[in-house]
Image 1 (spheres, rainbow, N blue to C red):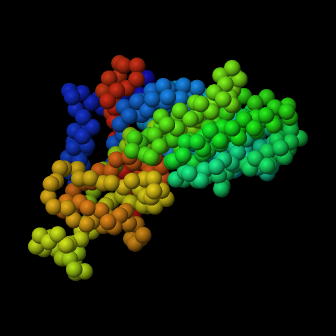
Image 2: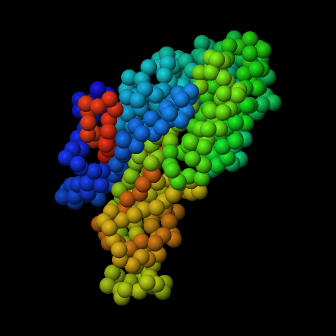
Amino acid sequence: NILSPENCDIEILDNGRTINDFIDNKIEELGSKDSEQPFYVANLDDMVKKHLRWLTTLPRVKPFYALKCNSSPAVLRTMIALGTGFDCASKGEIQLALSLGVAPDKIIYAHTTKARSHIKYARTHGVNMMTFDSEDELVKISFCHPTARLVLRIAVDDTCSVIRLSSKFGARLGTVNKLLGRARELDLDVIGVSFHAGSGCTESSAFKQAIADARHVFDIANKLGFQMTLLDIGGGFTGRNDFKVTFEEVSEVINGALDEYFPSDSEVEIIAEPGRYYVESSFTLAANIIAKRVILDDTEHSDIVENSRDRTMMYYLNDGLYGSLSPIVDEPSYYKFEPYCHRVNIDPVYQSIIWGPTCDSTDKLTDDYWLPELHVGDWLLIDNSGAYTVSLCTEYCEIKCCIYLTELCQPVPLNCVVYIGKAMYY
């Protein structure tokens, strides 16, 4: 029902149609309307398979989807249908989750630096579980939501992660006694511990040490009289199969550490905050080449130039760093920008410089990529583009979504894709 035609704009992929067929049809449709609008296609199959993989690989850990990673309505409705919880980091995200029917007790307000008005909104709407990592945050919560169920976020070793977070968030272990003592003075209820080992962790042993640190904090809290019942092992899990450390390798270490420090008879609930794990490989971006230049021997030429392999191509897309591709700058060692031609092209390849559409010269996507010669109006496809892309578009990007399913009668949707169109304004 959550993903039914009555609740979403759904088209069923039938008669053997594939996602590639759908992309072809969408490009033809845009062409008939004289439009070059870039768009995303999301394979909901991939999200469902990731969830089943999670349940099998990390059976004790309940996922709370990190809404900030990709808040497309189809994604959120899919996660609701799969029965996950939600990690929200702002009032707006809480509003969105609640508007889609998520129960307040399935939300963790997982941000350690919250605005007072946002805390009050959470209290008013029954969202009680939230994180903290400082005394000032405790004082703020005591005024705005004194009945909150608090989770102490600790800083852990994330030196082996592509994206590190502990320099900004998390209490050092040496401050835990003081923080918990202050929570006791303020008569606040601390129920658990959270941490984040960073996104793209390349050393799975970091999770074992983080879980051991959490056990240490549990012991301190229990001695102070707190009833500790929750461990949140954070997010940053990759859903890609080409990453240095696989999800299965990390999960094996996590499961072993949980059995050692939080055995199943400890009655501690284990949750996590996966975001990119679910959506990263599910999304493909289709962007249009809106302009082109040919450079030969530092001299600009038209398309009529002789077929020299020494020429450099400059292409301008209608999406870029100020659109949905900012992770290329923010996460260059993690996000692989590997565009490929919409149509198979076996022509000779040329060094290509690819720009975004804005007037900013830093809006460059790559300056050393090899592609067959393309022309204005051609399309490039970019896989693995579902994490922190759509959700980080600037204000001149307008997002709309349509959902495509095949078998609505099945327990979970199969062979599903989502179309997310983007109208860019400059």
